[in-house]
Length: 173
Image 1 (cartoon, rainbow, N blue to C red):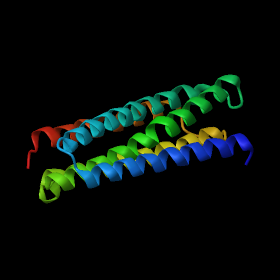
Image 2 (cartoon, rainbow, N blue to C red; image 1 turned 90 degrees about the vertical axis):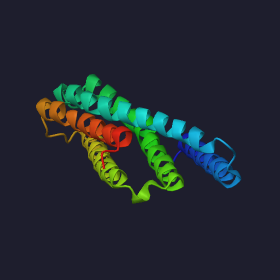
Image 3 (tube, helix red, strand yellow; image 1 turned 45 degrees about the horizontal axis):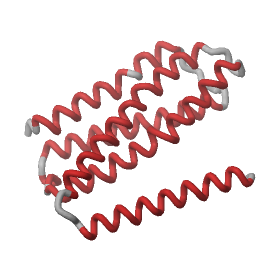
């Protein structure tokens, strides 16, 4: 590991530790309005996660058409890696942490709609994991799937998102 990578890793670790410490302090202090702030941050995290989950397979569509090793392919590799590491992964973690805290605090764990929602969010996390594997395959020039596959898989996060939002807003059961 070179010095630049070590410096970046140190900064990331420090940012994570500071965020954890500040969040733990807020949870322990529990000021008035904390629930609403965490709900707002949860919604922001969900929007960021979904934006990435909808955009990444679109990049795969274009990347699948690019010649492996070409300048265009290399550009897609950078875009996919940065999108995943800088936006999608942190947004997913924040979505899960904040969402579980909100559900616990509000006492929703006995609600059947939440069980269904959590099941769908687990599926969404599985799709996320599949996308991580796709990014790795593209990075190593090992993609074997055609553009059409990525056009179809692009709809999965959309369908999951629709079902999740309906469960949260309507609470049908």
